[in-house]
Image (cartoon, rainbow, N blue to C red; front, top):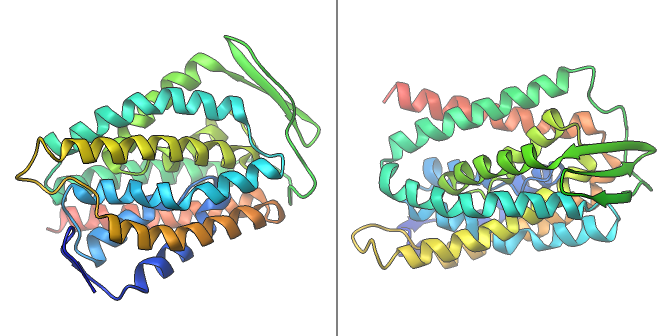
Length: 294
């Protein structure tokens, strides 16, 4: 099947199957899977124009809602954290989208940038997997967020019998920086912010997942709208998302994220982080290798 907006020619069953396989595992860590879907589109499908970033965010819009629903229903949604993430990343997404079109239209340069971002992300994940500070919970079954409070300086909550306190200003500034990178990379920022929330701020991965997915959903909606609006100002470039291809990816992601978020509470935190770490480092190595050998 040929998709004229992106120039991709692929069997229509391939996008949803690939999206399902990726998002099933990544959604357990609060990541939609868009950060792995992007290299698949670029390297396998040959979709390398700026439009690929917009299509990637469109995948998030279709795929994430069931995950947000599951984490909220099971009492593992940190609403204050989601609010701070959205407030910080949303402005950055607009700036990142503009930078992607103006300064990173060349696929080779984009792969170099994306490779280093993913490498840093993978190293942080590896450090946390090997750290003695890694969570000892073997599952989150029956555990919920409780006693959540929010002030101008910090928010706190209890989970699995432990009190957690997070400073607001550093979290907001960090979210803003991630928003810019997420806008450039076309992933909404969740793939980069989730592991750092666990390693730098000490938030349990079981409670991070819902908040980062919700933050990614909101920023992705904004990113899709912004790319669509920018398309009129850049008629010579392919900027707007491929809606049909994005929908097919979204169908698979919808099912994968729903099942992944439903089963997350049964999976040990260390295994969730290890799966994410392995996938991220593989993609980072592939991108950097392609750049230096091109």
